[in-house]
Image 1 (cartoon, helix red, strand yellow):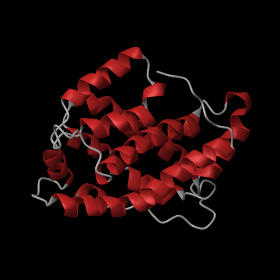
Image 2 (cartoon, one colour):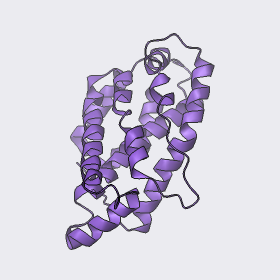
Image 3 (cartoon, rainbow, N blue to C red):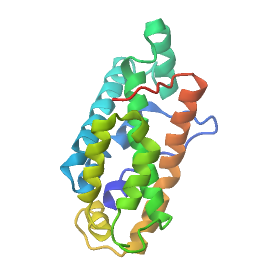
Length: 209
């Protein structure tokens, strides 16, 4: 649980603007989350997450004063790229990053909600499958979807996942799930705010890879 709780997301202000620097600092600790899922099949999602974070950071670093919020980055790139936007730069990177974040959010929420396979309650396939269905599946072509199906069968037991999330420390399941609930409060609000921003700015793209 240390992996999540040591790097909490900030509470959003009243205007629901996401500050770029603290957002980038918080998400930079999330790629190792996919190591906790055990299978190397999750490595491409981890790599995508890391790559998209790096692309957004590279744009932010060019002018931190101008790009104080994620919305300011999108607005500047819209003005700069014209007809090429939103399929460019940090706008495109954040579009894919938020989908990876949504996957994490739905998966963790499913765990704390108690979704499980009644015949195999210590498996987390049900939770991973739900997260994939909601956050990523429609953006993936047939081949990537088949890879993900294979990953489900390599997913760790819930007890092993929670231990990995706690950096190898033995943990009580209910205590761990309570910490995940706390982490999800600001994390979910942030992910939701990014999705709302894309919707309002008409920046969504539905193509698959």
